[in-house]
Image (cartoon, rainbow, N blue to C red):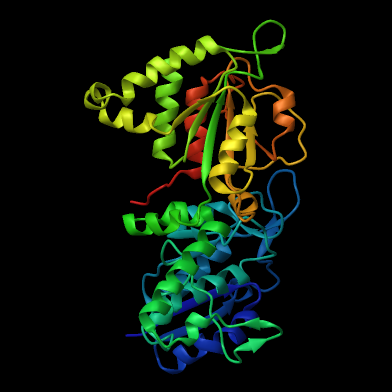
Length: 411
């Protein structure tokens, strides 16, 4: 039994040529699908317009609901009950749109093809047909081509090459010429994971499912470090940069967040010797057999913590360990000018530089302007729908780490 596809459009000729060519045309020739394309004008009385001005102020024309209703009735009387798909940018209508009551009454599915507006639903309809029909057996020659597509797993497709071996001083990777299929498969998986994580971490983080996929993707996330500043921060007396006291809650909770999100080391900076003595006693317990036995997971998280006297010690330690200086990311609840403001979706901008990443968090009233000025990038402040911006640093750190490195596993 073939699939019946009925299309109603302001510009039916666009679709007639589209469905007669390429793989969709072949599917029709094979009898896998049947199509019928008609104009909205067919469902109008003589001299009746298919659209009317949008109600209320604003520009734009809207296809009238009675015209759409006639089209729906025509096709369902001819072919039976249909699954009806409407296309909408789900935002302000800038050009010709559809009366929303028609969508509410008839639409089984309303689809947007992206966060932009085109001049009608024709191109979205064609994109939809291309993406759906290729999953019907026989439309695409080889099922493997569909199964290995980008956007079907946590990783995009691997890079592909065709002869010649060398073209414009660019060579095909030697592994692909080896003839060893097992080695080639491993290479392809790694390349697909690398490309996806570095260029579209947003896709990976929301589609990764298995521990194996997590492990493979994590290979291409650069090393991340966290530093909690108790020096070079503003204290309450008039915005003067100074020192704050270390609290055990911040040590515990931020260490646990760092362990959750794979942070290499959690540095705590204080210029005060007495604060170092207090923290040393704190860590002495958690490094002991008694501490590990009392709460093994807490002790495990605190193993990542390093106590130092100043920020430059942090940079030097990361350089020693990584062989490269880190890219420094800061955030602040204050309105601060910065030449490189980024969003929590800009991982590719940072990660493709192939350097370790250091996230700085400040205690007291926040990081000093001088310290923020030294950062390479400034992330937006953490906040909600209110004007209140006084989260504890341990809460802010957890939110920032989740927005930057968190995995949102699908059901």
